[in-house]
Every structure is written in structure tokens, then in C-alpha cells.
Image 1 (cartoon, rainbow, N blue to C red):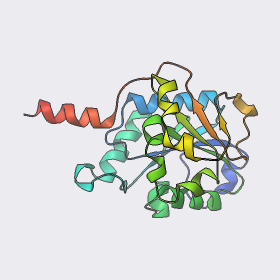
Image 2: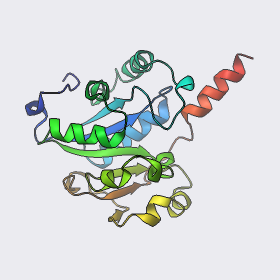
Image 3: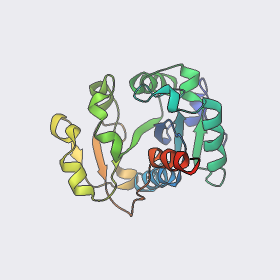
Image 4: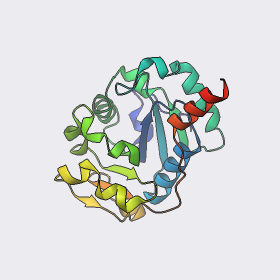
Length: 206
């Protein structure tokens, strides 16, 4: 299947889709590990990678041009057909995740979505614009790096959200129509980040 575009909702009717957003500046194996683990654990049909034109929480001067980042993601996922790079966020012309989520739910009303995040995002999620609206709109999965238990316990979202927090997933039995927060700690995680990669690249050029 080709990646999704707006105004073709029927093609994705009834499917289980993971939404994996980010700058991917640059994309790396840690991103792929998170997306593949979420797909398996929640028995997702596909994961849509939402390459953001510009992350509001990151400085534009350190973010490479959109097309360059998208092309890297596209090349990276060629061997993984159920991992799909998309231009959806650019098509929607949205700046914030809650706008993207609202736009996608309107464009694909019969598709079942779950938002996928790395654990590093859980610790700043309460700074996202309209974050309360996001957690009340669709299920969210946070994929924890080791030591997972300590990271989850110290997470501000864990202490402030009144939603159901769940630590076990049941594959296709997980109801993606019901908002909830899932803390996924299964499987060995890769301790790698885009920031580390950029810093190492900068050092190597000195």
C-alpha cells in the first residue's frame, strides 16, 4: 500500500494505525525500534510517521529542512512496508500535535488511531499545547527506555492526568476507541537520541 494522503479515508476504514510524530532530526534506529515495538504490541496494521515541518518546542536553527528530513525517513523505512513516511502534517498545515490529531480524526473518521511517543516526550508532554485535549481524544503509548520503572514514576504526566494508566497491552484486544495512557516497557530499548547524534556529528567536524 502507498502512504496515506488526505481525502482517501475509505482506504483506511477499520484499520488500526499508530501515529508516530517527530522532527526526526535525524532519524535513527531508536525511532524505528519504538515504532516497530508499538506495532507488534498493539497489533497495528500500519504506523504512519508524521514528519513535522517544524517542532514548536525546538529551535528552527538546529532543525534541518523538511524535505531533507523526510527523504531520510523515506529511505530508512524502505525495508519496512508497514512503517509509512507521510506528508500528512504538512498537508494539514498544522503547527501543533493537537491540531494534527484533530485534523486526522476528521479526515479519517473510521480509522482507529493510537499516538506513539518515546519516553523522553512523556516528561515534557505537559508542556505541549492543549495536551489535555490530546489525552482525552485518543489512546497514547509511551515507550520507555531503561530504567523504565523510575522514568514512569517520575513523569509529570503520570502524576497529573486523571485518565486510566495501563501497563499491559493485549494486542488486538486493546481498544483504540477508548482514550487511555499506555506505558510500554517490554523489550530491550536502544539508548540513543537525535540530540546525541547531532552533538557527535558536530564534534567530528571540529
